[in-house]
Length: 128
Image 1 (cartoon, rainbow, N blue to C red):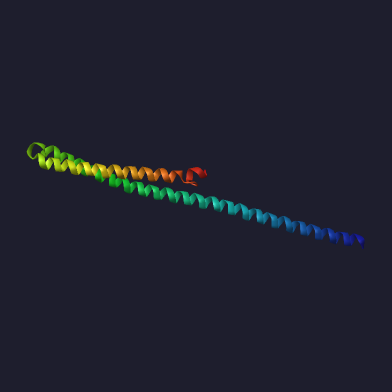
Image 2: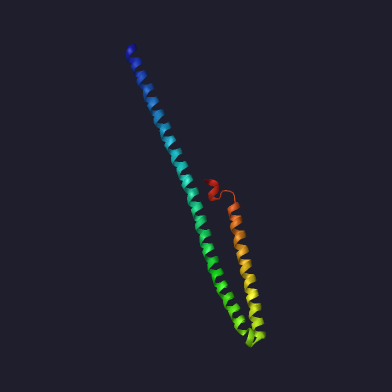
């Protein structure tokens, strides 16, 4: 009778041990999956931020290109009018001056914005 009781106790203990090991393994797997998912979420957030920044830069470069073309045209007009009509040439140069000022403001604003984004904690480079 004693060997049967010991066998039953041993089997129950073994069953409990296997059950505990399986539960711990499942918890370990869940924690590992959660960690991977969190890292993927952080990477996706970083990539989304970079894509937004690239889109903003493309729009800014497009605007700068247009402004430079307009500035170039204004300077050409002033150069050609200089001999014929100095007053109109002066007006064209004034417009070119204003255009160059707004262009410089846009470039400074963009650079400042990029510097602020790069200094934010949790930016993609800081996470690597």
